[in-house]
Length: 200
Image 1 (cartoon, rainbow, N blue to C red):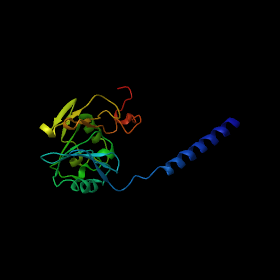
Image 2 (cartoon, rainbow, N blue to C red):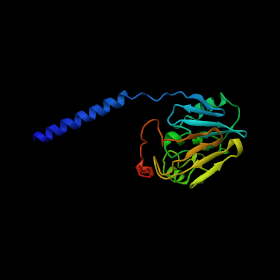
Image 3 (cartoon, one colour):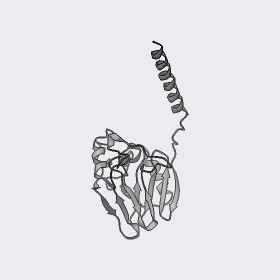
Image 4 (tube, rainbow, N blue to C red):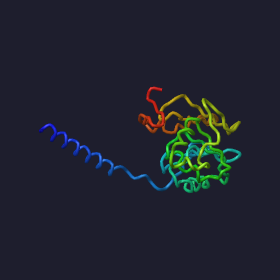
């Protein structure tokens, strides 16, 4: 009987500690900020995953579109550095804070993602009934978007954060966008529900 009481007290105390920690988490800022990374490459923060904006001769390539309802804020920041239209969206993986605002952009914008990311998105309640949010073009191991100085290489090396993590390389700038495979200076979360693996 005593053991059950101690266990119950530990569970209640642990639950309160978790709840208290959750309340102390900083709130996600509701404003987007933009900063220059290199030449024609910018990062837009806020609203979930970071969005890259790569300005090419033909238009703007976005990498990830944050949470739902962030499209307008993304475009405000893009328009602060260029008047070129968005022509392409690359999604690094399936999570809502990376694909959530795909649907905001015109149907003429090509959406590119790994084939497993598209399969995962088909199961997502938030986007599966929105064809404009879904990838138009997929790849298995590697694909190139654009050419010359505007070339972008997408690579897939196996399961990690999810089973469809794309590494987005800007060869001319010697820079890479990694999505959530490298979320700061910490080990990435392995999302088993979307095929993630710490081994692969």
